[in-house]
View (cartoon, rainbow, N blue to C red):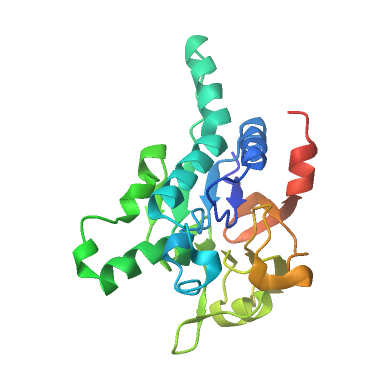
Length: 257
């Protein structure tokens, strides 16, 4: 019997208040249709723009509220997982097997804004918390920011660091050369892939995919916002080797199911 598995990867969603999350429902429908063994949410599912240090004091910062950020994350997660919940409800009614994938979420730097806010202003301790996002309540196995989770030989983290300062690796090729392991990270917009081999012939792949959203970011400008957006399916995952299938948001939204 084959031990090879399928991993479905959800890059950064950066859910903001007032957005249309229809694309997340389409992703949820795809997940139920294909039923991968593992779901990996690579972090920055919530945007938490009210806690962004970059916008404080600017016109765009006005009106941003923590409660709205949390609400946006709740609505986005409910939209993503609604197809799975509906499917399992039907299965229960018909006394059939449930679909229960392993669900892994590696927190990103946007979620980490909550911890940074508390650390910089101790009176917020007990008022603001990562637990406000309720990821565990949805069934996610939540891992702290920059923790590395290895599943079937593939390392997952919101991003992988390089050098003494702990900055994110600059490219998929750099990630492969520094980590010497198949790695998948988010954080950086667009899509990059680099491949290599160990001495024994084992194939290694590093992937950077950090944009699973439809909105544009003003700081990127007209050209910077033309990056790839989507999710990934890894087929035949075993000991760090896999066959990769990128899934653009435009493709996922075009599916009838």
